[in-house]
Image (spheres, rainbow, N blue to C red):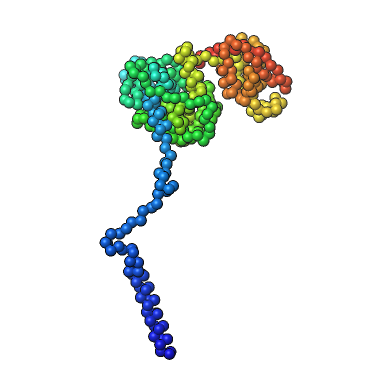
Length: 385
C-alpha cells in the first residue's frame, strides 16, 4: 500500500511540473481557441461607446466660419522725414560740413479690422491707421481695396475706415450688449506678424479693466486668447461667432503674447462707430475739472466714510463746473443719479452726458453732502502729439 501511495505522489508531482513548463513555454497548447484551425488570428473589436453613438468633440469651427470672412488685413504706409544719423557725429561734421537735408522714407504698418456693414465700413484701432497717408485693405478671399479714413477717436482708440466694392461684403454680427461673462470662451481673429488670417482661442479673464494707461476711456475685456502685433483692430468673438470686442493691446515684457490681452467692448466700439458714421466725429460731455483718486489716506484726512468718488484737484476757470460752484477739494460722488466709484468712472459718466443739457452732480464738501446743477459742455479734442 505504501508503495502505491509513493507512485501516486510521484505521478502527481511530475504532472504539475509538466503543466508548469507548458504554461510557461507553450501556453497556446492549453487554449486551442486562441489559434483557429484556419491559422487566421482573430482580433477583438472594442465596443462603441454610448451604445453606438459617435462621441462629439468640442469645436468652434462654426463660430470661426461665421466670423473669419468679415475680418480684414489693413496695410498702411506713411512718408516720414529723418535726419542722417552721421550728422550727429562731430568728426563727420568737421570734414564734411553740417548738411541739414532731411531724408524721406516710407514707413509701413500692419493691423486688422472688422467689416461691420455690407457697404464697406470697417472698425479698427486708431493706432493702426493714425498718420497713415495710404491704407490698403485685404479681404479674406484675397481681394484688395484702397481705404479712406471716415473718422477716428484717439481717446478710445477706435477708428472707422471705408472701402468701396462692387458686390456686397461679408459682415460680422454684433453680440448683444452685457451678455459676456468671465469664463466665456472667445476667439481672437486677425493677422499676427503678417503671417495670414489666424484664429486663437481662450476665455474672458476679466471685464471692466481700467487704469491701465492705454486710453483715456478704458473699459477693457481681458482675455488669454493669443493676441500679437498685427492683431490690433481684429475681432474678438464669442462661441457663436458674434463680435464682442476689438482687439487692442497686450501686456508683454518681450513683445510677444503672455496670456494677457485687452479688447475694447463692442458696446463702446459700436457707440463710437455710429457717431462717426453719422457726424464724422465723436462728441462727449465735459465739465472742466481735474480729478484724482481718493486713496485711503486722503479719505481719512477728509473724514470720509470710504474711498469712493473722485477728488476735485482743479477747476478750469469759466468752465461748466466753475459756473456751477464746484471747488477744488470737493469729492464728486454722483452724476445724473449714478454713483461715482473712482476718477475713471467719473470721466466715463461725464462723457456719456449730452453737451448742452443740465445734470445733477452730487458732491461731498467738508463732510456735508450737496447737489448742484451743471450745464454740460462739449469735451475739447485732445491735442495731437
